[in-house]
Image 1 (cartoon, helix red, strand yellow):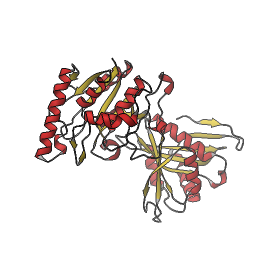
Image 2 (cartoon, one colour):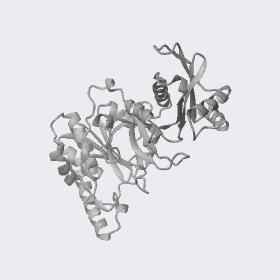
Image 3 (cartoon, rainbow, N blue to C red):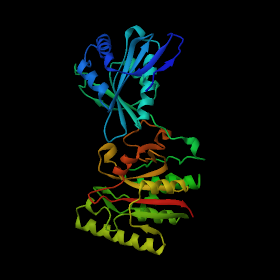
Image 4 (cartoon, helix red, strand yellow):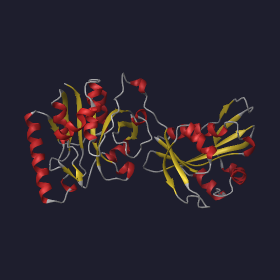
Amino acid sequence: MTAQVVKTAHISTIALRPAALSDVTALVALEQRCFNSDRLSVRSFRRFITEKRSDITILDVAGKLAGYYLLIYRRGTSLARLYSIAVDPEFRQQGLAEKLMMQAEQQAAGRLCALLRLEVRKDNTAAITLYQKLHYHEFAIKHAFYEDDSDAICMQKQVIQFNSGSVIRQVPYIAQTTPFTCGPACLLMAFNYFKPGQFAPYQLEIELWREATTIFMTSGHGGCGPRGLALAAKSRGFAVEVYLNNDGLLFGDTVRSVVKKAILQRVHDSFKQQTEQQAIAVHHADLSISAIKQYLQQGKLIIALISTWQFDKSKAPHWVTLCAADEHFIYINDPDTADIPWLSAAERQYIPVEHKIFTKAFSYGKKRLKAAIIIGLD
């Protein structure tokens, strides 16, 4: 990162630049002025400056080090963490913390991190107010996180956004209203994208589930299988294809009862027969990232089965709608609102998932089941 110079009404000149080892003494002195505990040491600063998975950015005012932030990147994820941020007391109340935060967001996005996360003391009202102003949302509490056993509020913000100007219209967001209707909610998003306003979610969500359900799954109501969802879309006038890398019984390993397995098998056989009768193409192959991008470029949508382990450490199968793709990300609409109830519908649309993360998530169970439905206008 090259130095950036910004004129302000309060300060003659400020500059943002990468930290160097020659800044360590000044950084440690700044820590002493800003914090009573949890200070970074000389050794820590040296390590973070030279580490490839971290960035320290300095804010200079008239040549004096007045603030900094430290970002840490977790290998194999699209997450950045704001590990530390500080502004010299001499230069506070002049908007410098906000400038640092905005630069941190840009830098995280430049590293292809979709989310920026941070921790803040529960009693640090000034910082919390700033983060809320910048649209950070609380998602957890870490108890006894700091040296004095104070709790930390965990907050995050999506820092990469889909370029909505690149499409004529966006895929609408429709939330599932039960734990087992993610598939129908995804279908409804696709239906109302291709034929706006013609499919009422409240009326159809359960109806679609009844048509596509596997009856049983894990310990509760069954979710929906790919053939069942495809048949439901086909019956409403949409063109569909199915990708399925395993033609055997789906979700059989999620139930232990012999009786339930037998019912799952009967439903599976019935869906398979109906799919053949309706001449729905079933491709027994993996759906690659390049194929996903090609289908989306053709104006189609994709409903994909994922394991949410990559996102929330849950092993549950889950359907999401793939809305767009670019060089780095797949953009999804996730119908599940249970884990992130504070987000608006607009914030749930076109969530960026890096290609390598999506590839890991795009399978379910020990057999690495991969399933997807391609949907378009007939």
